[in-house]
Amino acid sequence: MNFYLRNVKSFNDILQQETFTKNDLIRLLKAEGEDRQSLFKAAEQRKAEVVGNKVYYRGLVEFSNICSKDCLYCGIRKSNKNVFRYEAEDKEILDACGFAWRNRFGSVVLQSGEISSPAFVDRVDRLLKGIKELSRGELGITLSCGEQSRETYMRWRESGAHRFLLRIESSNHDLYKKIHPNNDHHSFEKRLEALQLLKECDYQVGTGVMIGLPFQTMENLAEDLLFFKKVDVDMVGMGPFIEHEDTPLYEHRNGLMSKQDRFDLALRMVATLRLLAPDINIAAATALQAIDPAGREKALKIGANVIMPNLTPCEYRKEYQLYEDKPCLDEDAELCRNCLEARIEMAGSEIAYGEWGDSPHYFKRKKATES
Ligand code: 5AD
Ligand code: FES
Image 1 (tube, rainbow, N blue to C red):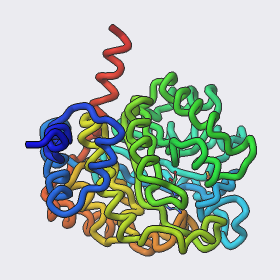
Image 2: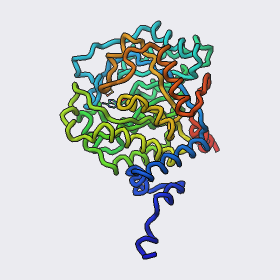
Image 3: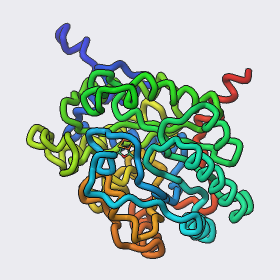
């Protein structure tokens, strides 16, 4: 064997490692053919060994699309005048959560645009208490309501939320700036600070990125994966970027990878992350389903273990289009549940009814800080 061959790691050598350099990650993210199959197989095995084969449900209620921000990629950005703005009534939200509880979903996610008015903060607080009451404390609650003050995060935590999703969108400062307006209301530093605050307020913290953004490189994505590790998050949700006609990033649509390539890359991101951070929860993002009808199930097979069936009242769904082709626009909750169940079973996973499905990583992290 010549010197060169002896010093280059084989793809399978990388798969056996427990720690990964940026270059290792790039090789995993670029895997094709047999290598791609080996990556998926390794991630599937790692998932079974570390977090098991269960899939956890989080019933998703997109309770308001009113947003104070203007992210350049997002269909519900403040400046998009083609969206009818709604706020679901408390009763509608609690009914959706009641459905989740009766059907033993385990947890719900309350998601909205980013608003920080005192009235909004009070409303979420009231909803949290209402959900705990209607479910006799049984439903786990995740919030996804953007950047807020420490006081607000604390208050919501005390009222029953125990997980929070706040995607970093891209961990690369320059790329973050390219996909957000250049002002104080869209600051990368504040986003980082908010993630830190969430950890300090004792949430299970989830973050994530979009995959296939304009200007994004493979190196950026490998760095995103290392960022998740560095910030020591408990959960990750990431999916393909999908251009939306009413947003400024739409003008870059011709420079994007094909949707299929973005989808494939998103699957490789999920599988690679399962190897890099085996004990976290990884969501099978809804955006995957916008490209491939079986997209989320494919992600579950190769590393993801959380799925978020949409429980938003049907009349509001078409107004919560963050991206084009968002699925399940007119299915009601019952239908969604039936169709999901069949597909998850097809993908060979078991649904964990009535379990919170907390991230094992969170408990390890807590133990490490306590000792
Ligand atoms: N394509 C894909 N994902 C998007 N999101 C927002 N806009 C888009 C888009 N055009 C994602 C963001 C946000 C999450 C709620 O939805 O990552 O954090
Ligand atoms: Fe609403 Fe980005 S457009 S948070």
